[in-house]
Length: 428
Image (tube, rainbow, N blue to C red; front, side, top):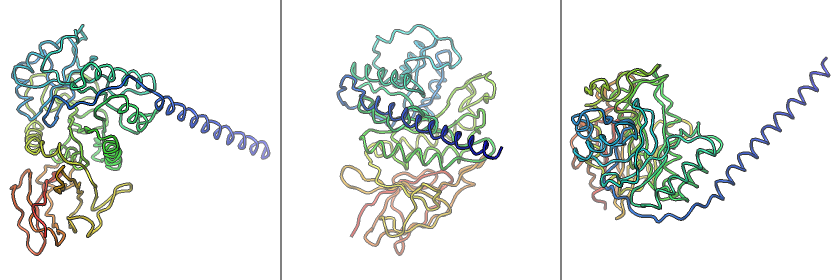
């Protein structure tokens, strides 16, 4: 029996190795298929939409009121995603009336209204872009999404078109990196992906959150295209309803990694789906604002105030004071922010086209049911001796303007999850 077990063990081991080898071969073949994909060339053109993109998955539907669309805009959303269902035409009309540019889905997203025939050949002026697919998985779906993007981008390269990626851990066969490379090479002008990291038990998958951000930051820099990132705003399955500090943490850390657009999932929402909350940013049964509405409105308007600046910045580095595995640590006397004392912070370093230096300093403290004020931190920042003057360009809850620097140091009270955008004004 012992010899038999050993024989079976060896056989099982060989089978496992064979399966691993086969899997590796399949992955290589898939990568080759994407590498060899050569769709017709797309002309690179500037996007006709010039503002900072803030957009919600599942905005108010066409069956909502005009006032609901106005509330959406007043919350600081700069783009509206129109869903091609039975309310599509009315939604486009309401968006036009309140002055909201539209990035329309090309296929119904299952938002509660029945799908309806839509004539996409009508090029309304307020449609500035298209969303072809959400989370395509597997090679056939990925190729379909890339082809759809390529077709629409060739029709009008100023009306930017994209598909939205799965979270990288779920993007398999093919994986995220070869899809990014092939999608951009074949005409997609920006990157967008999902990330669900705040859990109902109060825990957070921060390691995945920052790993995905770093992956898309690097891809964005490599391909010279922007990327958009994501914040959860509705409780469903094992994910929690975000607190004020949670929602700020999601979006300010996205910005610190160089995101050039922000998603929320969702604004409206379902009324009768199993394992889903009944309210998101608003209550879909009435359009009434929830507590998240005011939190997000305040955050969005702060982002829009610095939006033109953010769109011009290039990410140079991202460092953490208390790094988890895979996160880059902050080293003293390496950047123009030479030292920092904080409970848990990160700094995204940037430069603009003229060489001016910026940093987005984020207090990473946040938590379930915790307000931003509850998680505030008094952060000491020490500047390089060559730095003479620094300005807070944008400071939610604080006072923008020149920092008070004494003996090369400044003290900033930053609320939980919140970032302060700093700019070097003068050096020796």
